[in-house]
Length: 140
Image (tube, rainbow, N blue to C red; front, top):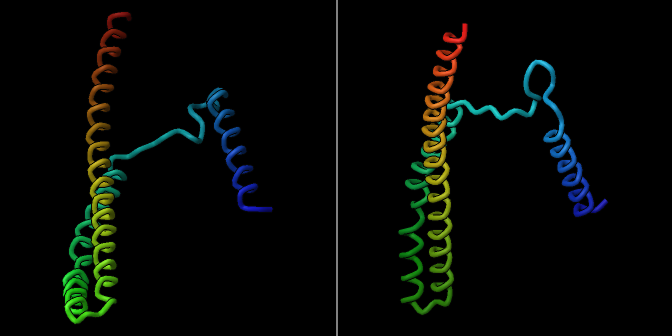
């Protein structure tokens, strides 16, 4: 079986499971096993890991930059054709390092935002539930 055929079968099976889950009633005793559960502690830990990765990568990912730039300049000044190639490696590394750093920052910031938004939603829902429980007291 080719990869493309197997991949197509897996996508079809996943789509069918998703449609079945969406169109079926929840299991007795509450929601099904596919309920989304997000803990703020989990989000904070992942966001913290992304921040730490970015911090370390920012420092450690820059070690080679000065040396490769100096080597590229020295080789170019010495009329070596490889000078421009080393400069391209330097530039590519810088571009990819910046992209990776930006991605880590995006993950960290997004999870911080999500964590804060979930806390706001919890407060709002809690307030809504309080008003319902007060109304229930009047109905007795």
